[in-house]
Length: 80
Image (cartoon, rainbow, N blue to C red; front, side, top):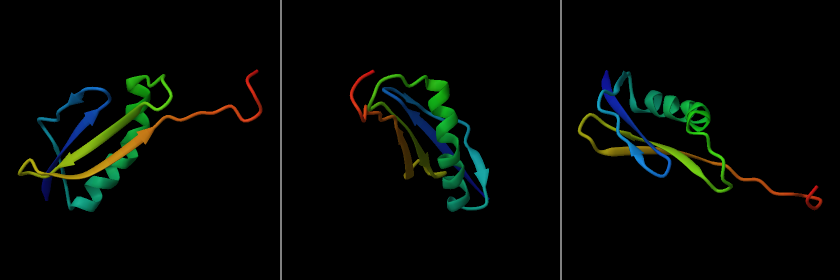
């Protein structure tokens, strides 16, 4: 097992100092991807084009994966 760290970015960076152990990098990356919707809810994204991302670092502190969620919207038939 290896420890991976997940840093969250939404205008500022919140660094993970504890990490979580996973069997492999793929399992860790899937957890990072699955966590994005909850992170977006917690961050209260309100502006169009806002992004929340999670950057996964390995046990040496090297960034190895990033997943990003962007909030987009548009009116299709004019404004109500």
